[in-house]
Length: 340
Image 1 (cartoon, rainbow, N blue to C red):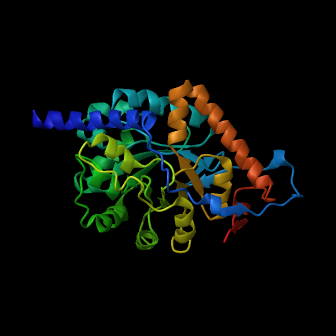
Image 2 (image 1 turned 135 degrees about the vertical axis):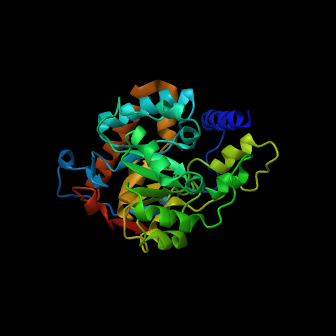
Image 3 (image 1 turned 90 degrees about the vertical axis):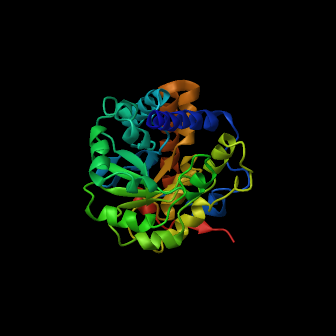
């Protein structure tokens, strides 16, 4: 009975997360992404045809039609299956990446694998599975690899979310030795691993420790978008709002981490438009990722609304590249000015 209720608890939490993100004020109010402190180095007479600007990038040996990925949203409950398939279908149409929510629920209850499976609607795009850093100690590498194979994932995202866990009423807060365990785990794991936060940011010190490990990429997931601290405060009646506005801004982290991490960096945390994405590319990001805009679009208008969102953002990226005389994403690097 205890085991059953524990499994159900995880599934119930996933549904609560979706409802709170869509219905409660959980976006940052005081902390911004920091991208407003940077200006694109505008070229009023680019030697380009806008229609010929190329947004395609390659990430972990997979082609993306634009440097964007819909980041981890959900999984592990019936509602998640519809959301994942709907958003993944839109990603397939535009040839961009998609990251699933934590597969912890699937590891606890293997029958939930269908809530994560999107290959029937997204056979070609980059799809990443997902597990928490603490769960790496709870499951073997073989069990995690099997969960990824079941959904035909291209990579594993490991999320490091100490702030969220500390505020979650049933959170796992023993992170002792977790970073070294992650480094050791990556040493022999058969798939690429992306390390991410969930909206409070990965600092320069952690990035430096991971720089020469077998980790393939970092998703900095800074502050400025959805606050998962706020989400957990809404779920926990005993929690105070002391840490509601907690974290390190995305743009600040991007500039810091680019100095010490030589592998691909994904900028996420408050990414809402193509202008921010071009600024991130100029600050050394390989890709940008966002979750809330896609979830909100799907909730409001289904797959069509997500497609419209993606089309708009991709066009904004093309315009941003054009306005800094960059014919592709690679040429955007450095074409940004920091305001004092």
